[in-house]
Image (cartoon, rainbow, N blue to C red; front, side, top):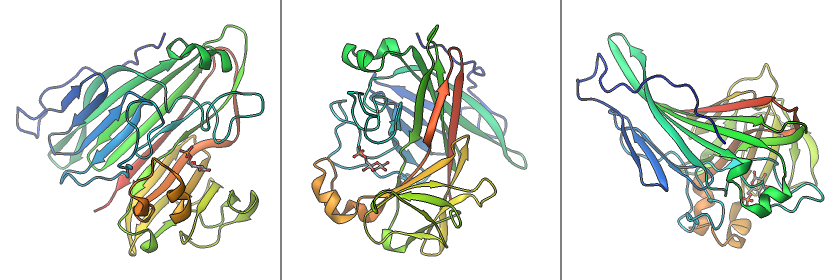
Length: 318
Ligand SMILES: O=P(O)(O)OC[C@H]1O[C@@H](O)[C@H](O)[C@@H](O)[C@@H]1O
């Protein structure tokens, strides 16, 4: 069973905002959404606990989502923020499970919502919305449980603040006797205006594995630009600058990581996009950039009773 996280009581009015200002939540048993009084919104599909949409106060979408993506759980979502667990990439030898594991296609449970307030500036109080989702071994289908027979519990929290989105995953080993190894990753598809004018800063000096060059290990110098199929697993230096997306010379996103040592940078480019049935429009690769915080270059070994927590906060600048 998944547990309910402790959370502050839901507030319906906040000093600094009109007495009627409150977060609007909706849940149709497939999609859970929250809208802040200031207009920012987030929507999460229970299939995969996939964040499908994140909009700013003016209604501008911050995430890329394929128009051909399956949203009924038959395939992982192509866009938004799919969650990768318990492994990244193809399954380890002997494991009969799909690429990137089962978390992004399993149906999660919506555990609850809450509202909290934070100081937004002198005399201003902002509201933020928190959505909690859970998935445990008991929630998997029989074939998946057989393929990965560990008692685990995942709690995924999506927090919408004015100007930022935080996604946080806690993995616990609820098995009484056996440890398990796992990897986690948040496969964020950021929406960009023009990939040719986009670069990623904050990775200068970081080593990376270049998956489109025979998994060669390289060192990044200067900003990352994308001019063809790109698939890299970066290990940013602990002392490095924060990872940011810069479009036309202007910072549009920053991506802060908590306890996630890697950043995968992926863009399929034209040919690979053509080969993916669920990737539409075919030239959509020009408007997306995956910047994926994760813990994937090694394995997290969780002993019975142990937990691992990792999070990302994406901030946008307009
Ligand atoms: O097609 P999928 O399974 O969603 O994966 C998309 C991409 O996800 C990235 O994270 C991987 O590094 C790529 O190798 C992979 O192609």
